[in-house]
Length: 172
Image (tube, rainbow, N blue to C red; front, side, top):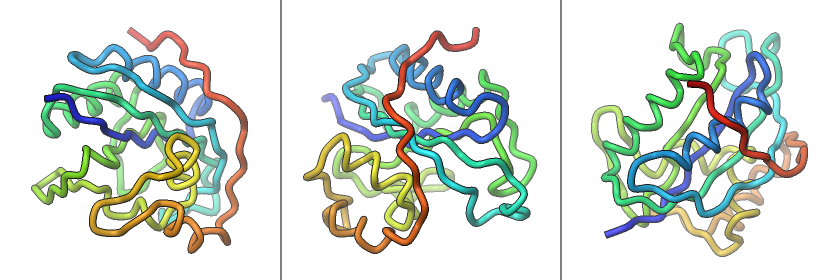
């Protein structure tokens, strides 16, 4: 049975907007998966990272997909896309060429090693909540409630809407 899932997309190295756009195109090529919608791109400062003050700003977006993949297989597909975009993990919250987070997988709640859905910090991040609201203003996070209500607690976070995303050919 197909499941609707939401993927957080972010980058702050190289050409962040270009990386976000090629990641969106790559999501559309995942096996047994269709791309349903994408948010605009948003710019925000790095947060929660060692040296966050000196990191470049992030460009973020959210994609909505419909997939027949199970959550673990979807996560593996996301990690492969990150790898093709030159992602490597030097330390927690390090600058990155691409970050893909499985935010929501239907209404499932999953807590396994390496896989936690809903994403554990998504409700605290305006750069996630604003794009989610753009795609579906009635969306709820299982166990936490309506995204619209949760977003009101993040209004103090500086986020700039850059405009529509434009999926581009992914790197080979």
